[in-house]
Length: 84
Image 1 (cartoon, rainbow, N blue to C red):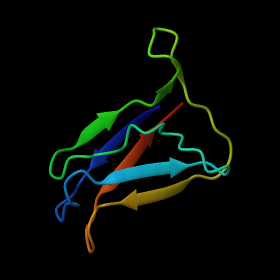
Image 2: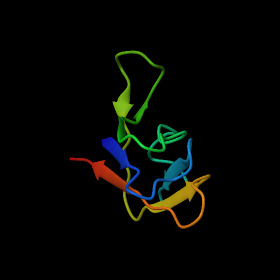
Image 3: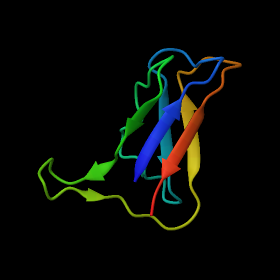
Image 4: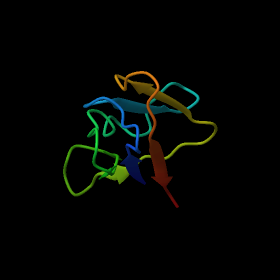
């Protein structure tokens, strides 16, 4: 899975955070969407493991919920999730 954040024209405040929770309240992005840039698009890959070459992609089933914090009010942006 790969995540891409695009802050848009009315960009969020610097270091805004995104959490993508599954139905059990677990962040399927495993924390990689914290402290996003205010004006530059960024990508991140969320893997679980011990930091070695055996890290694996996160799997989930069901609905996801998006939580954005520290972005300021009346802001915009796009989060794109690439998965297969």
